[in-house]
Image 1 (cartoon, one colour):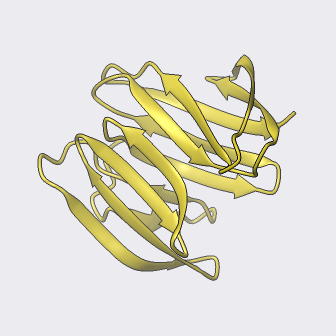
Image 2: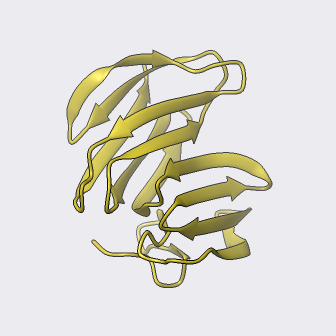
Image 3: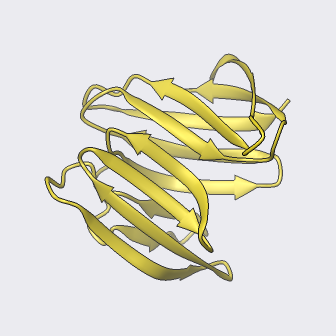
Length: 136
């Protein structure tokens, strides 16, 4: 897996890939059409942020490169890569309990806040992880 050089792309399987954790300065791409929605990504080595139709979807600090980002009504899954461990925040359903899996192992159940945000820390250290979040 590597940084997404076009900042955001639609994969052949219908998933999104976005972000470039290797950039030293901010880059963004707006109005990217995918699945009937418009996406905006802002990314560099300190932060990666994705919005759909102006609504928060994903943020990581520091920045990450994300492949195979796939959302359903029950959650989200993706592969993240970065140079350092990251705090990832996802925009999900409000006040809903989710089970979080990192590399196919459950790290526990978490409940989103009133804004629907859920945060998870992942150990990257120059590697990648698979994250899956499912309604409990």
